[in-house]
Length: 362
Image (tube, rainbow, N blue to C red):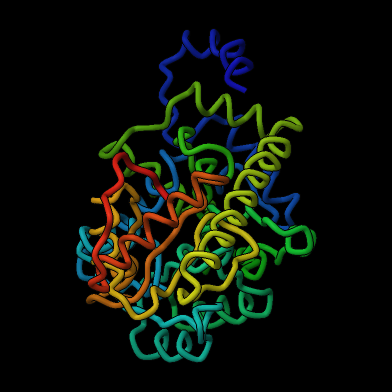
């Protein structure tokens, strides 16, 4: 894809190279992709950003003034929670359903009525960190509730391509925006970083044209635009069979890593509890009554790095959890879990024979 992008770069070097909304060819390719997924979209509804975090930052700063309420799933993606805190948002947590297996629609209805948040941020597809997948009825219900409350619903679809089980991949729910035909209640975030490679720092916003125009105008005070070469590479992926091939490779790797991690956990830490997700990149794990923060701290010393549960919550919630990403497989997965088990024994007060050098990411 990058080789193809280089072959197309020369004409762009004779221009200013400044495309605040994104390259027209990429905006068209992204709009066509949404249309093919059942959500008719014009290029004017797309703004290309520097990753999904760039998209979230733009929305937060320009649609939710400091002190505004923003409803979030609880738990939710740690980086987004920190971004919202630093922007001065008042976070309104909405608990997930029992065992963190999806949305609690009754809780969402109550929160939207009582708090009337300006924005709500949700991850419907293989939720980070729990891996939950919202079904179509839940999506329809939440969109209707947000519209009735006057809340803009931000749907983070960065994991949407990462269905790891064939049955799930064959029967994925429609995008959240499909239940908002007027385009007034749902804003969608997307990214190539999760689906393809974290080194492609290209994301996008799909929203009503007036919102996109506001975001583009405000971009002059932020990062001005995204790199042209990376946009050309992503355009090549999206307009050829290369996207499907790259996503298939990514799924295969993530599936192998997930299965290796699950096998190692069940063999080595049988008292840790989790639901095996059908997609995504993370395993949300209850640590057998031990402190997730202390396990993360001890694990760092023993050469395995994992984020603790409270990073994904508000006011210290989820102390009894860690999030385990699907990043290693085979002997590395076994060794990483062995080091996690060693960290758990340290926290539980069991002496260790020796500490392991180096650093693995589980």
